[in-house]
Image (cartoon, rainbow, N blue to C red; front, top):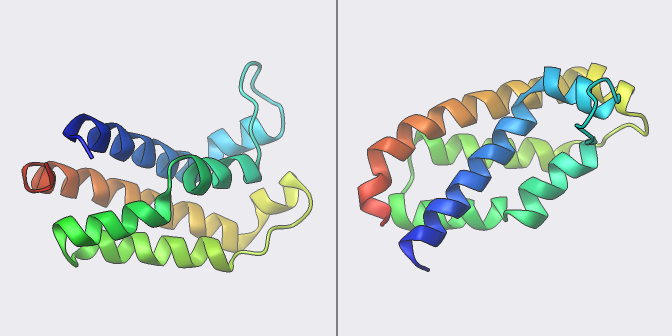
Length: 125
């Protein structure tokens, strides 16, 4: 994979994790409160996993950077999302304590990833 492709992939992953972390954006987009922004729980998850390959990125990161705090956070976020059994309505998901914890974990993962990205960028490319 070319360096430019890796940078784009990583940027997309970080963008998707940040979307999973932003509960206020989710409330506005999922409930139709922001004109021009349409989203849902399933769209957030699909973008992270199907469009951008979060599980593949975790493997890639481990292979290139080894085991560190960021990798462990990504693994835990992946497990929490995989274990999550969403409600039928967006309102119920947005008020579900476990989903709220997932958004907090995604925020921690995103913030930590930004730190590690700067630190490890030269090693991965």
